[in-house]
Every structure is written in C-alpha cells, then in structure tokens.
Image (cartoon, rainbow, N blue to C red; front, side, top):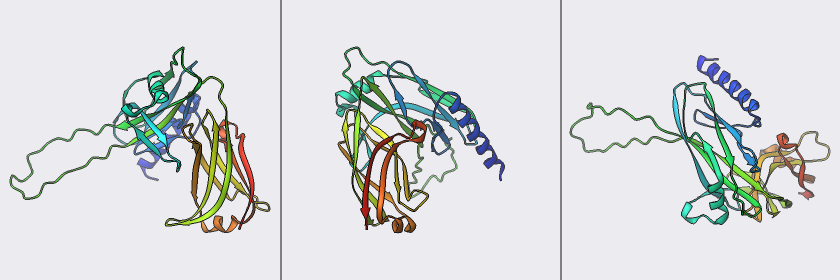
Length: 279
C-alpha cells in the first residue's frame, strides 16, 4: 500500500468516526477529494444538525456551499430548477434553511462541520419542503507565464472541472404520511443490457426513501438489492430500472417477492411489498 493510499484510508476512518460523533448515519457521498456525510438530512423544524466534510486529497482545497432546487422526473433523474421558476413550496424551502459557514478551506485530512437548521414560518402549511445543498470545489488560480509563443495559429483553451457533492435537505412540517405500491415488475432488454423494471406508485404528502430487495424461495441471499431509492412528493409514480448481471437475470424467474424497505440505518421498516411470478 502506498503512502497516499494509507493517508486516504486513515482520513476516511477519522471522517466516519467524526460523522458518527455528530449523530450522522454512516453512508457518505464522495466526489473528487471531498467526502460528505450524511448523504441525506431530514429536519423537523425544532432543532438543527450538522453535515461533515472531509478533504481526503493531498492538497488544501476550498469549497463553496450553497442551496439549489431540483425536481425529480419519473425516471428518477433530478433536474435543476431556476429560482425564477420555483413554485410556492420550493420558494418556502429556500427561505427557511439557515446554514454556516458558506465557504470552507480544508487542509488535507481535516474534517469540518457545516451547521444547518430550518426556521419554518408560523403560517407555513403542513407539508414536505426540500432543497439540495451543494458543496463545490473552487479551482485554484493558475499563474500566468510568458513562456507561450507570441505568434500562433491555434488557440488553446484549458477547461478546469469543478467537482462537487449535492445532498437533499428535507423539512417535514406537520403530520405527514405516504403510501407506496409496487407494480409491473419485469425483466427488459436495453442497450446497456438486461434490467429489472418496475413502477413504484406513491400517494400522500411525504417522500419515501429506502432499498428494493428481491428474494426468491430456495435462495438464501436476495437476488437483487438496490439501495437509496427515493420517491419525492412531486411524483405520483417513478419508473425504476436496475441493471442486472447474467446470474441475476437467470434467477429472476418463477415466484419472487419484491420489498421496498426503509434503509437499515433508519430501521429497515417495510414500506411496500408485492409477490409476482416472472418468467
């Protein structure tokens, strides 16, 4: 193992320990040299929480923290929403979230927390309000040199990618409920190969988040597990596609049970289930 690898491993371990200290669940999201935990925050408006950032790179990095609006499409994709196009619920969500700091300089291996809270207005209708918090790396300025030729026929443009992580911040205000039904499970062929396809219908005023588990009588282990499936309130149904290995495809025949459960760290409670025969 290289020194760089050992350093990343030690930093990741320290980051997970710090996230646990703050009461955050273990799952973390990574992009470039940035780790963020938790990957999903739910607030009730009474008390705040913290999100932990950690730089697992070898150089100091600066990150800008902001709030964005995104809507979920029926295929599960999240598309950006401009503030000028925000509806009443989205505008209310942007207005109630408070967070600090808004810019962080992280030395290598150094975690830091971002404090956040929700301040719902007194006349706020019951419902679920959501924004997405972004953590974007700010590229370091490059020094301009005079070594380039004075005369050239070609123009060279260097693009610097901006890495970032985005997590949902959800505020649930009032007594909310949601019901989910799983329908039309099937195996389909696509350009990417075989996929498990199904429809998840949602009713109520709250989102759901969990994992899909497919089991088959006679097999000890699940045939398919897909974690982190969310259905947000703007959707009445979501089409789910899960890539399959050849072994999974072969096992998705006969009698099967499809369960949509809360994530294990949230208790693993059953949200929806259906028995179906494929073949």
